[in-house]
Length: 188
Length: 383
Image (cartoon, rainbow over all chains, first blue to last red; front, side, top):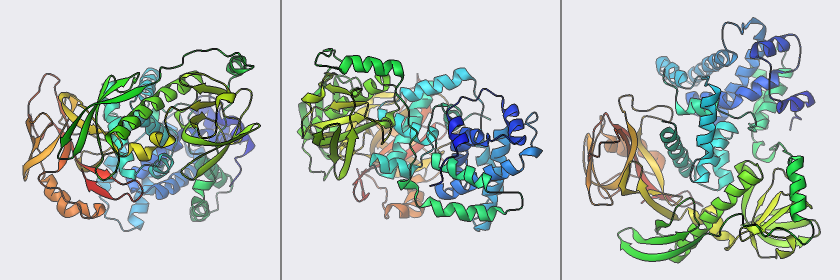
């Protein structure tokens, strides 16, 4: 196991008060804070990649590659013209398309790009985020909350969650689907 | 473009969420070990080596109990005088009536102190499970108690739901350690003066715990003392997912309160058709509704379902779902095929005021075949 670097673990739980542009500028000036960006976006990016390639392990590899590529090109990125997350997701989408082509899958680029659009990062107002968090906390039965938190917030795979809860994958999928229906109702 | 539920969930991720720390650690190691002239292929090769170890090398972020709360808990639990404060009322579940149906016995239960299910619940037992209705009633009582324990721990101890672990049976208590086990999962728990003990929904003491008691415990890390030990009212097996995976709850369908829809671990649903996890039928509008029924007839673009009230529902679709599933997609389910007599659940959207028995293709969202699954083998059978 790679030990989590001390500087990163110290920063992990600190709420980032810096604007993203300042953070990126700090990283470009050699300050070791890239972990904050990885921490902030990794869960969504892995899910985004998983939706494109349909395989969790490959998705994690592609997401990692996207983070590495973004880091190496960070000096070229202008945070005043686009959000880092949008840029990062586009890198990952291109890597996912390359992966699908390399593996000789029949890829309709338009379909993948359309799918990619539906899972691109969005930017909700704080009030709306609070409403979503409240709706998740109110999911009933509590197992629905547990699986939603585990997958969408804690970055666990379906297989890991099913193993931890000792339930079949199909049951887990059903719970996630029903939880999302309940959330749609609660938030509509 | 409309924001999907998945996008909302991801963007609403709390800053306190733990995240996939193995991924973060691995990615940062790759970032730091990668200079501009190294190829990404090398990075990819190094990551695959660690992947197989994922399950055994979890890094748990330890969260510490707030000092104020810890002090309060010490005051509550130290010495022999602790407050006889009722944290929750003990739930109970009794069988009122039993009905014999084509799919086995269906029981109406009377519940007390079950905030999740109310005062009544209709259940049936998964076929071939070997469980009795009385055991099913106990499993529902355990479910209600589990919810009470979780609600209390989440609000009083400010932990995440993944920190609440159950069920376990105490196998020994020595000094500051307690050994517990459940179905081969043996754990040694560290106890501390700050550990809270709860029994029957009230604060208790460590002295009241005995070998053989079934418990839940609250822990935020393997190396820190447990925050709370909660004695449960029934044998540990009633709290396990294995038991609950054999119970089917029949609840009023969403948007169709006159019909019953199956829920709970005893049933799973195989999608015959769905507009997908991320999207929805773009033409469907109105409230989300659900209907469950026995398939009594179908054609290329239509299905007729008979609900629990014996009412018939016609569901129109744009594609021949059943034929497509039976010929193209059923291979992943051991060749399972959909036929008349099977139980289907259909999700659709209609204005709240509409209560029609015709669901048009513009309103249709999803259809699933209900199945029961054996947890050990994951073998599935039609419900």
